[in-house]
Image (cartoon, rainbow, N blue to C red; front, side, top):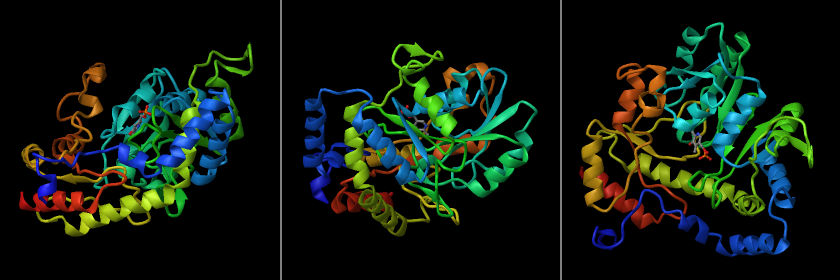
Length: 371
Ligand SMILES: *Cc1c(COP(=O)(O)O)cnc(C)c1O
């Protein structure tokens, strides 16, 4: 226990270099291979990664992009969802989900989350108007959403479905991987995500050949053939170095997922469930544990107390999008989405990262239960 006392080492909320050192030789060999290849953008590494990631997710096509946010807004752009259109999205998401909608001029219509922190499917129908065009499902913290219900409602009202899988690489609902239920699945490979790069990266997954082709053209200035531009596109390309490094990590996803599962099962069994509200998992869903999120009515006090013990924690997220300065123009105030606001005031993510040591976790559990 003393080893991790505040004077010595700390248990940080996240320690990303551990995930590098686990496969250091493989990452370094791949990095050198790409650096020495003389080919840095849209080459063999990207197309191989796209094939391998599509297979991993169980979707037909993957197109690598520069970030998760790009995946989201390009998805809506290709689906033709923009000015005047409404998109249903859960109110307790990371703000990038909402930006994916509003960059195109569409309007986010917020829906409260359920007790699993996912879109509350029973609150969807009352929000549908004749301008509703799509549902953006965010599989938050790594748990698959209630896809049976969401897809049933989408089909009933002829709505498009886009999945924000930035936190849910490999999470499943009734055996089907998130990102393959709707029209487009959007992924981020930001370093802290479960499948993280060493810089920015993103991708879309789709079973629609036409959509895949349009995204492929769009990401490269709207051109399929160099200097023959068909549409006004963007520069949003996954680069060769990131793609190569992602391929290395993807090879190890099964053991990485198992490692996080083991850590979180220990948290679930050892943390005092009378003191903290522990995460719950919906029947039929799997959780890939992007974050381990507990709730406490004394959250801020708990966070300060843990900080004193040398334990870092993070709030995902302290300000819901509808209360952020960026979205003041939508006209919402405090009290607009009470469940979301209560979550924002009480959630706390515990230390969780690849390569976390048993001793570190025991230290966290010890002080949590002493609170
Ligand atoms: C990280 C994240 C994004 C954005 O991904 P970037 O690659 O950082 O642009 C979008 N949505 C959710 C839910 C995220 O967690």
